[in-house]
Length: 103
Length: 385
Image (cartoon, rainbow over all chains, first blue to last red):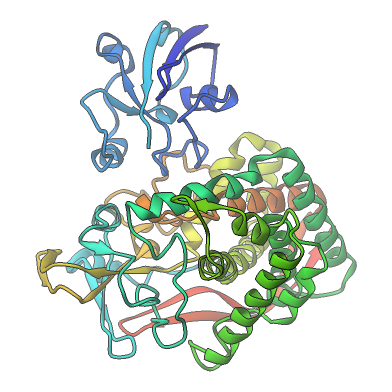
């Protein structure tokens, strides 16, 4: 079980729990504003961009090369950017906070 | 076993130079072939514009001589683009709603049941066009009967058998849309025409010309593309029954299968942009006012990103394809297209055991330097329950 907190573009905080799937799926299933997940999680659409809280970034880790290529072209990219369809839910990321990036 | 294959004609040019050339009605196009260049240029709307003065020029073949109405939001650049896109975006997300999906399921089930009852089916005219047109009534929220007119138009609104551009056929569509807009002004309903006529931008109502621009985009953008996607999917599953069986046994791969088929099919080969300032693409000088195009079909086969790019890997997990474009002008109809393909595949899985290809005629696009198979002119098959 992992608890994940999303901070939406209008500064609302939503904490959700899950045991499996991707972080994007969790957000979409619960209607987290700003996470669309149009491509269903294959790293094609960049509609699930988040900034991981700095202290949590080591838990989530660096993006793959393909994901980094996508992020590089995003306007709001930062060193803590991830596409959350590529973050698997697991105990290892329990307690992380993600700031949803508005398109 | 290779009738369903869509070969990659761009490989050599993509690896060696990164671009190709096409002389379209004496308005040449430099075709960008690499995924990274395509994505980067798609994001750079200031240098590679969609909303220039010459309406229709970003389409290849150019529609400058057959169209005066600006397609909206497609031929508008930021910042105005967002004002238009925000009006239409919620409407084009309706395919995520359960009631919308139920309507598509009923439409697709009827067509597949009829196909199963027949000895042979010509897929392009009698299956794909029918599903595409009936599904469009759900997107526009118009009466089911309106699809009959669209089916009667045949497979190409702009294109006839022997010429790529057909002004007479385009006029049929534009006249039809004019009449429907007048009808919606007289008797508003809850369809897209009425919704657009009631919409406001920057404190004023949309004009008839703007409504027409959205409607032309909706009709034109979602016709050949959707028809080719459905037809190619039928050909693929005919030759790959193991994929149909696998999706049945592992429904969790359905989304990956949809995205992979969309990558492989790349139903829109490329889309143009007008260069606004002297620049370089692939280390090659490119002049202001010239045209480039972003070749989604080539980018989707870029060996630098995709392993086994010319194979359909039905459960491909990382799939950064650009079949719906990329950036500001990404496909407005993508949610409808994805949902429709999902409904078609799940219905095939539940009702169809095998499909046999009996006859086929390939549809090959001529891009001068490249000849690309984009689908079929004719595909005769037998569906088995």
